[in-house]
Length: 239
Ligand code: FPP
Image 1 (cartoon, protein in one colour):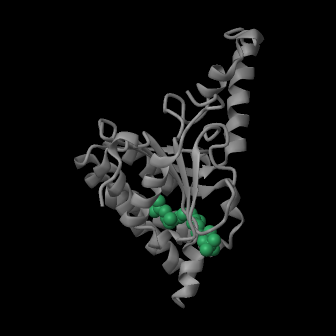
Image 2 (cartoon, rainbow, N blue to C red; image 1 turned 135 degrees about the vertical axis):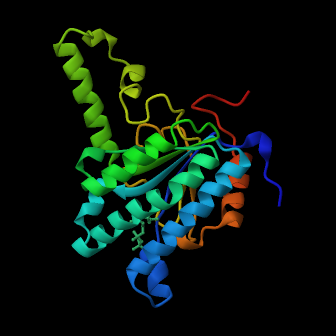
């Protein structure tokens, strides 16, 4: 199976959904679904890296996910911390630069520490930028950007007439990163769930019924083929 290398997205974003349903189908605990989901993160990161995709953003924990049962939240936090400490050396070797986006200061200290160390260890990576959205919500991201702008205006570092799309974009967690070209959501739901609402304005959306733990290289290939076939007009007419 050959990918269409000419029409490869520069930035892919993924809403990894369906761990719980995968576990139910396999008759095992939900946590096992998350564990398999975390293993799958490894293979999809590798799938993107080997194809030469430059940026990959994964929705790992939303601001709404705190509402899950406490034991599940704790398990997910441990899984995230463990994932970062196990993977960071290999990420460094493979030229993967890791960064977290979201309200990181509200994460448990142990996870924050893993995030900081992994960001430092992988800081010189130049092949793939891997962004994990952690305690992330697009509405809070936009609210945070507005707060920064207000502070700058109040301290006279910025004038209200300077506020434009670029000013907002430069204050998002993803400042400096091109917007995703393709967003993939696994698990069959057809919604964006407060993920990158500003940045996804012109992204191609790909929904699949496949549950996240089963979204393998073949499914990634299919999503990329579908993307390559789409005609992107950015609100304009066809030339
Ligand atoms: C959705 O499954 C998944 C999440 C809560 C977030 C994604 C988390 C992982 C893939 C595991 C850890 C990630 C890393 C990066 C180590 P769900 O529980 O909503 O599934 P359901 O809708 O079938 O119940």
